Structure formats: structure tokens, C-alpha cells
Length: 101
Image (cartoon, rainbow, N blue to C red):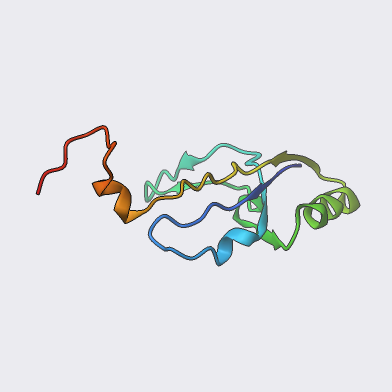
């Protein structure tokens, strides 16, 4: 069974970083999804794709995979670049663009 360990990104519609601290363990789908012939809904016989485990650290998730015998891959998160900004920079003397009302 192949597992994927990654850190969930910050939700774009929220300013906080509440759920972004956890590491997520998800299983890769073993079977492909097919439409149900009667209803037309997309379904799969693989129930492991519904499992999402949360861990406080990457090491805990890796330790869990090794203990259970899962193959795993770790996706490192992209580091967030914070560019310092100031409102006063809109009105500084050496500004490149023109200032308009």
C-alpha cells in the first residue's frame, strides 16, 4: 500500500493558519474509479482512499508508516515568502510608477 505524507496548505479564504500545522497521511488509490452502471455515480471498491490521518509532526507520520509496513513518500511544503510592505511606500519620492488618485 502506497501512502503520501504532506503538510496541508493554508486555506486561501482564511487569514489564520490553524489547520496548516498538521501533517496528513493519505493512501494512494489502488483501483481506478468507475461510474456506477445504475446510478452513474463515480465509485471505487478501494476504501483506503477515504482514510486521512493527521499527525502533529512529519516524524510521527513516518514512524506510523514504518510500524504498519506502508510504503510512503513525503512531500515537503513550500516555504512561505513574506515581503515586508508599508503603506507609506505608495507615496515615496523614488517610486517607479506614477501616483494617481
